[in-house]
Image (tube, rainbow, N blue to C red; front, side, top):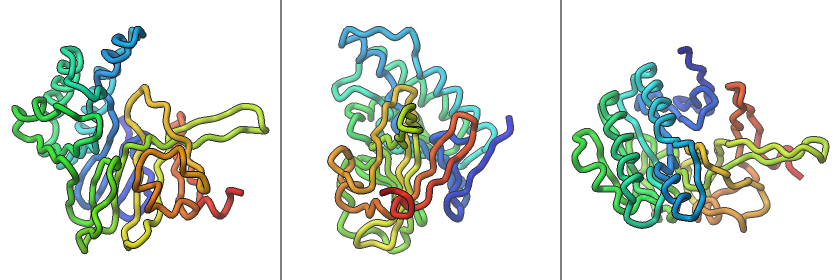
Length: 256
């Protein structure tokens, strides 16, 4: 299996036009918003899906762990889907996923997302899993799920804030007819800090996503994007189905 890497910043790459980031200096794979166990919630609401994403996502993650051999795997929140105590099916999916991937990487760091209530039960018996309720910082990177505001000050060495939560997508019409929608990474400046913000697209197969527009913030979920991000100056790295990353420069250069 050949891996395609697309560099978006020094030391930072998108892997295979997937919602996966690789940090060369940390030798770390980053992904977020898996929402495992979502099928159980769908069944509670009267819906049925014959497809269970956990098996597929587990295989994808293990494949990349085996090929890239990172030292760290960082899961930036919303590993599970329900907001309440997990069902038996969700228990099975989350625990099974973590146990399976833990065999292929030295360290797993999980930052709690807003969906990750009662998640600590699934991590306590796995020796190489570390669970953080608010944030995790390593080297020049600060990781937070993105559902809460940033602290007033960041560690001096931090150059990148990496969040998830928003499930950002690029949304547009072609010739005012066909509408396209594709997951996208966001990269841009923040108010009152030298650090840049990187927003991860969702890893979940069920993600619908939030369209990102530079001059309209009412639809945004993350308070960091709403209050701190200078959106007109953000770049987009759109993930194409053909394993291509489509780079759109700062919104202000092309969006009217």
